[in-house]
Image (cartoon, rainbow over all chains, first blue to last red; front, top):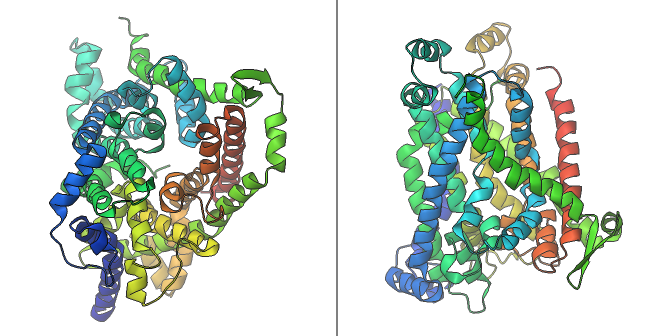
Length: 271
Length: 280
């Protein structure tokens, strides 16, 4: 038993080490110049070019602005989409009303309809509204995120109806009831939703790629991809930018993971 | 505010936003797919765009590429994820939460970020992978190997995530069932086949459907990792749609591709529900 336990743990640890190699290598590469990265043997320990790489990123892509764009967009998105999804989740879980089932079914259609189907009309809509290169164009289309609504409905369903009914008997208004009675116990689910929404928007690529044109309005993934295309690509700079895109999110996730995985999956696979 | 209208106010923002930015484009896309653009003029073209699909060898190449990933990468990844989930759930494993988190970490990484990292790691001349293997393998420039590389990147990214979904389900399988199997003299393999797998069924269905949708929509990874090359070996339907819409500005044809894709996803989803859903 003991031996089998050790074998299992160690073989899984080796696999995990292999899986994490790209993260280690990303940190190392971010501190080297392009020439050093493409040297044989490749660098395996940190180098001294991190600041040069960051300077080069700033020069070539105005990366400070790009990071602020990404932070701003993801933050606003998390707050607004979080509100929209939570309100809808509560409405669908805690009220019976005409059209509830078909409306919810309609929203869930969004889970299976490929995003690509909507790209062209959405692009034309944004062009007609003259919203290309604006933040509302990036934000609006995904505010009613079907997965977020699904997640919140599942979580809200666990809230006892008696709690809400006793509030109603005491003459508490519906909005106050939602804010004061329903939301407080939902904190873990809300945290999971917030992390999910922030990560989703932070990493979102194709839609911002389509609506954002001006260099000063780009988000991190779009800016990185545009840097990669050019001749004489500066990989030191790109990988430093990639590290900025990936590592803070990994840290955020590790700090808040207690809520995330359980909250995200609590309702996902129950029938 | 009456009792009757209250619930609608809660769901209204979501429904309105959905109608404007999802439902409207879905319908508009269908209308577009029936039109042709030339010189800024739109003319009704009936099903011409769909007919053109049938004769478009690049479309079939893209479809074939997606089918290969679906047939090879998805089953391998889900088998791996099942193995991981069983290991995560095993009482024999030490430090279980560390493993669960560690394997989930790739999922946090944005598609562009990991695409860039993999493209450098797999560089034929200077990449870390070839250096470690002491080899000279053209990971991204050989048509077959480019597909393999794309599959590796996808597996790296999504396996841990699928394992966690499967684990969540596995934890609901009553341990008494395993005890009963042990009493009946079932070994580890038979317990897996007769207790674990049936218990996992709903979660396997979910991960299969999600992976199918994801694979058919694949865009970011080939865009960054291989640019669809070499020689269109990693061109996906998602990429082909993007090229037609935003490189050639042929919106009508792009919309026809989008609808073909949506139909395909719908059909495969239904099929998977039939095969895997069954009795649960």
